[in-house]
Image (cartoon, rainbow, N blue to C red; front, top):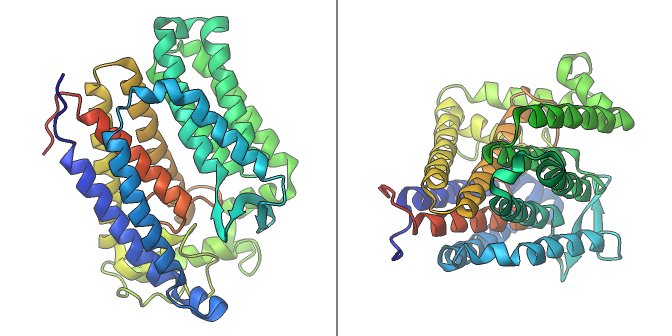
Length: 366
């Protein structure tokens, strides 16, 4: 089949979200960059650089035949493993009590982003090869569980429970889409809930987060501070917002407002209307991703598109859920919008793959 034009709606929506991200990163990071780094444009410049690199990465994957990724799946996943191993060398960079970054030539890389990228490709390859065999316990479910468990473990040892849970849920969603038996999925759900319970109760700070989620105003100047300040930001934005650049909560009331709580600043500066527009843009990306997955000409393309779309949807849902106090507080960036070079490039690479798959299907591209 001759290649067609890429999905224009998906492409332009992604670019709009990245552009909004650049503006909001600059607005939300200005106080931190000015007072702590003596350079108000520090995060803006970094986000611009990675957005440009990400654009080239997206274009590359848009033109790199996606079927070749199946042959490279083990190698791509191995790169993620190697990057994770580097965390436990002098290259590992620790901040906020966790070692989640590898620092090379002054730039930090998050191995978890490489693991997410590689794990989705590896799972899609496995599911496409197994076909109906995925309904078998030993030959289908157990190998899939090993992929999910090992991928999640690589991230949770950093430690990063929220990202680990995001990836595990994404891979489980791919398993569901592939047609795994309902009884197997229910069992997997119990295992996941049990593992999550153990991970939360094993660390005191995770237990405190659950308490904060249930009763944030019982400790307004302690553990409940972040959640309450996030709600203040959203509430003070009103319908139309305080205006771009006029957030008060970014002045050291919120920790890293340009990353884990950037949606709070969007709500404060752009209001309910601006927040809804951002959510609609994400819904458009998810909608186009689902259409591409349903229209894919092969199983690998279908599962790969499904995994990418699920990752974007789940991570967005968790970020918005945290800043609105609908989910327990945790740190997870908003795709395409939050500051972070490797995250931005990874998600733009994922969209590039979706665009590539869309070139090989019968699809309304408008």
